[in-house]
Length: 112
Image 1 (tube, rainbow, N blue to C red):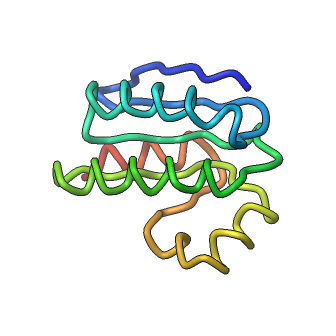
Image 2: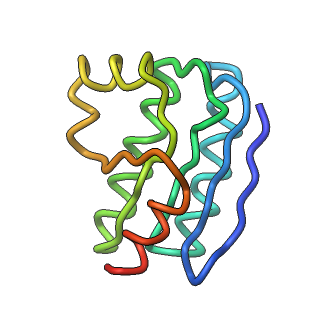
């Protein structure tokens, strides 16, 4: 798994490539925490993530709670149908705005 953090117009963009499982979730969590320290507006691009275990879902929930406590917003980008199904089953999907492209996420986050 590879995580890249960039900033666009005061929005932290976290791009993840590869699976997020129990082995890679700690690295994902470290990077996600860095992003929440940089901005209250975060786009997490999961376009290149095919699999996410419960450990990855836990990190997403942690990011959501952290940003929510700062009155910020998190948008997930490019979430696969399989991951959306798991998120729906667990109820996690209700916490997030999910869009298809990073450009869509940036437009929404710039409005807030």
